[in-house]
Each structure stands twice: as structure tokens, then as C-alpha cells.
Image (tube, rainbow, N blue to C red):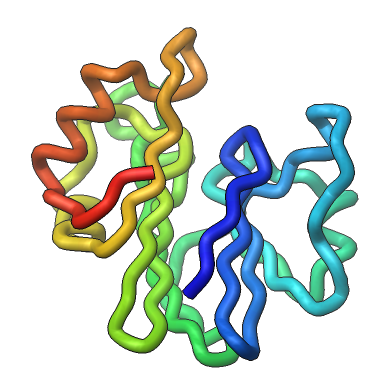
Length: 156
């Protein structure tokens, strides 16, 4: 799998036959969307969902679940969003699997991740963690806490 970063929390994941895009809200940031009729879009929360970008894709998901998209298996679970009250679950965490490799994307989650999220992403090959603080993303301490709990091979 190839992983390409476009800014914000937007990533493209490609295999030989499948192209997935995560959190393409680039048009809201003044950039050009990377969606096309060949891509499948995944959004880690309604906060980053971009209806115009999603409409350009072949299919879009803003809910957790288990999906087969071409040659990629996707598992998603709900998580507490970064600014959510305790018990409220407005974010999604996705894990993408292909050919024995896994890429997990956290999105804008609260640093207190649930056991279900830990179970999904523990030992992943690549963990994508948005860090910045300032209320919308994890600060470095919160990110480090999640990384210690899940022990990924590589952190982006």
C-alpha cells in the first residue's frame, strides 16, 4: 500500500487496483479536492465531511463498520471525538488492510481512547495521528499516550 499526505488530515491510500481517500476536506481549506469517480472516501467525523468532495467519489463512508473495497479490507469503530463530552462518540477510527499490511487512521479523537479502539489499532504497521493541539487535534502528550498504548511499527 502507498500512503500519501495532502494536508489537514487528508491521506490517499493506494494499492494496484484500489484508491481510498481519508478526510478530504481540502476544498474547505482553499485547496483542490483529490476525489475522483475512481476513489472511495472515508471520513473520520462529520466535522471533516465535505459534501462536494464526497460527491466526486465513487462511494463515501462517514460511519464505522466492516467494508471490503476492492482489494482492501476496512474496519472502523466509533471513538470519542477530541472535543466530545465523556460517553459521546462522534469520531471514527479506521484500519485499512491489504496484503498483510495495516494502516490505521485516528482522526480527531480524544486521547482517552476506548478498549475497542486500542484493540483495533494495536500493533498496526502504520498509525496516522494528527497532532497540533489548539483544541481540534491531539497535543503531543495525548498523541504519545495513544502511541504507547497501541505500539504501532511506524507513526505518521
